[in-house]
Length: 93
Image (cartoon, rainbow, N blue to C red):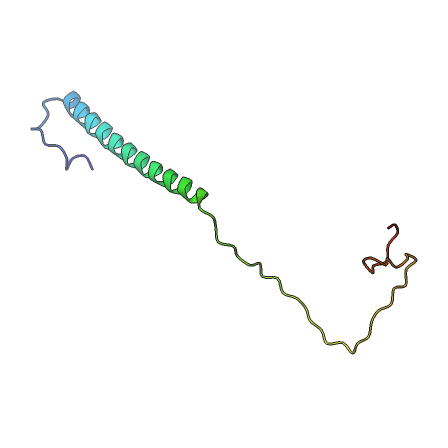
């Protein structure tokens, strides 16, 4: 509200009242912009500082399914030969 901030005596003309109101609004807007700029700078500095900090390693929530078996093994039914180095079935050395 502007009317609560007027400290001058009653303006003589409507033009004087408009000029006073314009000056007060410009001052209010300028103060608001300065405040927002300071807040933005503060937030920018905070985010820049946080980028350099290493985030703690978090374990991914990976669950493994364990099942009880009776020792039954699946046998390979494909046509690839068994590798003597890695004991997987594949072509090549």
